[in-house]
Length: 306
Image (cartoon, rainbow, N blue to C red; front, side, top):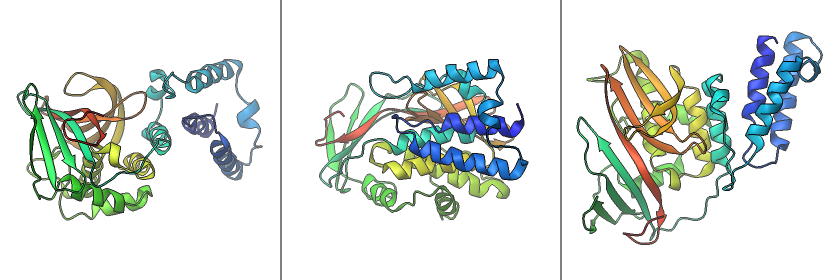
């Protein structure tokens, strides 16, 4: 099988949507096939009929595995497939799943819930935080402790401001990258470069870091914007996919990895079935620090769980 046919086959596999409406994938496949004909001069039926018997059988197995839904409607993705795929293929599938998530209206009087653990050279107790979406109140409960409700801090990263920023973001991946690379401040769950990034990767680090910051607030990100973020990650130079990566709590998932050079790597860990953001870590000199998202959602009252 020629290289361009393999690429096209990978793209076809990545186009499988979360539910069995394949009209969009069929349309894009037709466009991709037409481009392949224009470049190679070979007839369009080569993809369909040019497979070997073994290749056709393998494709059938892949198709069955991808199309078979679980009880919750999410289609599992075989790890062996993703191990052979490029970041663009894995993250395009993540984008398709994100774009089909249900997104109900969010009210100012509701609260964003986040349960997080921190591992910064020592394991701290997990904590739960509720932030009112109008930015006025917040509540905190450490593991095993009591709920404390206070006035919200008015810093640059409070949830009210983050919500307004998210709603104003473009969904086009190129526009997102341009926006994030032009930020005056670095937004990242963790700093990848210390003390500062090399000038040639500074914009890429800003974009990678900002996407991870917003992904932590996944339940309040519009589906189209979330899909754009996955596609934007795939466009950042130096990004790769690492299968069976672990977050700082030992949970396995898909690692989206940014290589900053000199043995420094930033990771975002995604759930291997629904691509939900699970946390981040930075590996430097063989040592890792990071945070894990153990729960997130929109609720009506502080103390309530999603």
